[in-house]
Image 1 (tube, rainbow, N blue to C red):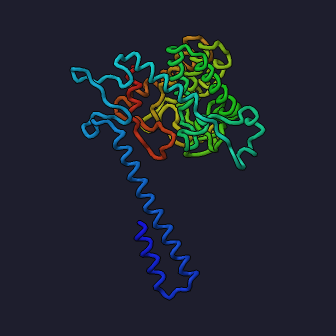
Image 2: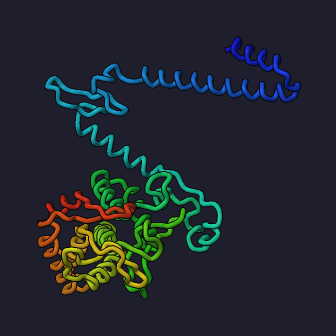
Image 3: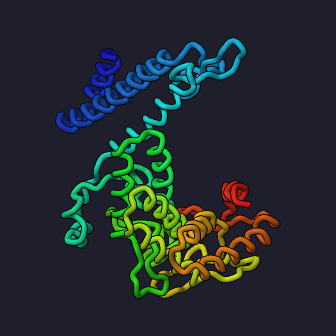
Length: 348
């Protein structure tokens, strides 16, 4: 390498360039040369480290991401952590919780925090990233994230008995209820917005269609989980919020048709303008109605009527024509989400 750079220097000395200009160009090429070969060295070095860090089974399809695939004498796959499936299950599911509770907080900078500072910042100076991002970098939580979180941690709490899990469920539900609902005076009142539109844990619209737009199917799922949390904590605030969500959904339920589900997929909660007419993701909404009917709470006749309309529509249309419609919050065009089919198998 030294001989090559010296040859470059001799080349510039033989030219008729003035000294300063010649030295400037020479220094530039010398610097770029060393950067290039340094990068090549690091690339080769770390590539070799990765190669030799892998199992000897690499290339034989016996290594999966971070772990060797272990098998018994019959060739059946064993858990990577321990041969005992129970021990391995306990370890992995605890890893998921440890990851979640240690997700770092997020510091909001710029105009955003100045605008909304008085309303929430004093309560939560460094909000956990899971209140803001659907990944650790993309702002805007998942449309069904709070409902899915409550569902998952409910199961994990029953499994582990850890009070910190229940405390996290209560914290997130309380925050969402405080900073995520449409106004009581809106056309679709008291239902949650699916997404935050800034790097702040305040939920006010749809990731694609923007401010004021909500997704009724996600509201139904969240309402169903609020009833679960009410049963866990006996806090009447969760039951009251679930009843308000159920009332709004039931009051807007219609028979539906080929191009229109009984409730729309996306609607402007403030004005009532329907943005997207179709989805089949109504499992959570059906469970919300069923749980309130079982508890004998709310407008029971309206819940039964809405439950019947949604159930009959599902049987007549999606189950017959396999047209399941959209679900995800970040897909702007029509999509058929086949995973919703599995939900109905557990109901009908």
